[in-house]
Length: 127
Image (tube, rainbow, N blue to C red):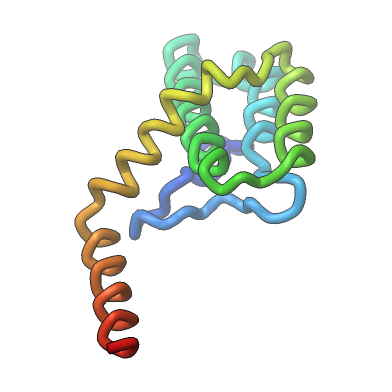
C-alpha cells in the first residue's frame, strides 16, 4: 500500500474503520497528500488506480455519514479539505454513495438477522 492512503471505509469484517470522531475522518487529507507526491512516484496508471480507490472509499464514508447526520461542522471540514485540492463537495455527488449505503444496510443479511433478533428479544420482554 502507498503511504498516505486511508484505511478503507469497510474493514475486513465489514465494519467501518475510518476515524469519524471530531470534525471528520482523515480521508480527504490523505487524498490531498497523495496529489503532489503520487504523480512523482507512481506511473500514470497506478496513480489513476490509487486515486480512484481513495475516492471510492472517501465518498463511501461520506455517504454513510450522511445517514448519521453528523452536523454542519463535519460537512464544513470536508468542504474546506476538498477545496485544498480544487474539488467541491456537492450533494449530487454524494447521493449515489448515500443510496448505496442505504442498500447495504437494508440488504446485508447479517445486519438484518441482528436487527430481527434484537427486535424479537425486546418484543418478547415486553409481552
